[in-house]
Image (cartoon, rainbow, N blue to C red; front, top):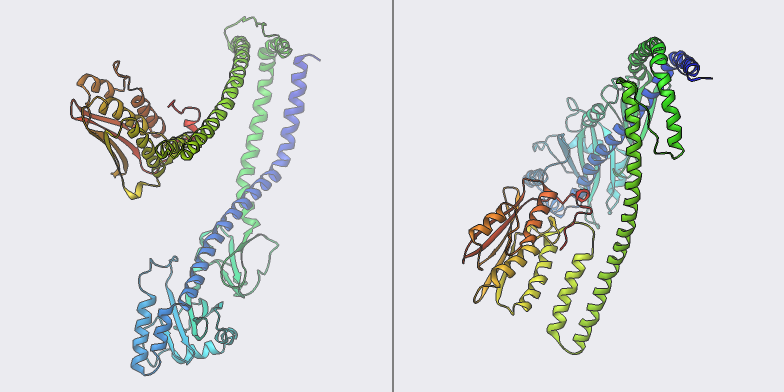
Length: 582
């Protein structure tokens, strides 16, 4: 069968028939895809909501446990036993202590508290009144099943429950209470309750809605909280009345009280079906339009494209067999001609790429060999230096041993990691060891000072960034100076940028050399290749907005200042394979 007949057969078999089947299957496919996407989104939303709820429940649970064992609160309760004036004073002390600024609660809802002491006194977040809510709060607590258990324990215990607002029973909103016994480990002083509006959790459940009519349920410790728009048939503590029309997602909510909590989200199937109708209609229109366009183009494609493509197909088979010297004849200047020319270009590019790959593989093997050798050399050098250091210590040559120890630390610092960054603290430790060796070299002819702001010590910085600058200060600045010299390094934060200054009082730079360095060049007479490398490393890793500035005067010294962003590590992806030679 020739290419033309195959094209017609393929069009009927792979276009007409699939389009007919697609019109039948698009509805089910769209429904399935939307359901999967909706369920996946709902699972993510439910998981995120569970994290928020877990955080708030843990905060409230931790808060009630903390206050229930607080020595200051226990001392207030002990002092408050006695007269009414003592009770009023205790009430004010407790209220001021609980509501003092501790950084604020981590939940955005008002929280009330009640303290029921073992001798029947009641302190609450409301204003003090000897005729207030004491009697009814005490009666409700004593009639609760959990009260006897908590008051009998001398070790800390907790209970979570849902009930009416005990302080405002007529116009208050239903509360979720976190109750714990107040104890110091040997005496039970009473019960502490923290209450938060039930609507706080209902609103959280309502805000995480993957679909328009979905709703959620938070349950645990015998307590159930529905979202604001839950079905009216689902009352407090009742299970969901009808699950057949909904998809249910269950997520555990850990870390609140003694019981496990669960978050359940219900997504009505009707919401999913509503969202899929528009996609189904759009899919049907696209299928019909695609079928029409396909059949209209079939004749033109067969006449204009099939025959030239068949010829290119023969050449492609030859290329597949490894013949890379074939060339297609370009007979026209239309798209088919461009296709033939593109085929010729592709064959040439393929041949060139194969050659490049072979060359790269050879280079890669050589590089791997060098890397293996480079991994051996630092280890050998370190072991050898350690051996020499121990020999020096055995001979009681403390100066040689100290110098070798510093050199070993520098070697370890240079080769220990492939990461391009270290902390400022590590870089400063390296600089101290480096300066120690340089002082030995120059026979203590200079003084070195290092100043670092405490808040910068743990921030990231490029490794070995300052060593080339210090080396320039010593070799080109202080080496040619008569008498004693000074070198200082300072790390400071200024306007969100870390400024690192290296200053010396050496020979300084002449105006011509300074101009070349400021322009990013390399002076002919002294090289200063290290300074250019430092500038390039900073701009490569942090961007062109950062870099190095140089100020110098002949005979007065040189100051080099580096500007890098605070707390931004070097881009490891950019720096792989681009570390400069040191």
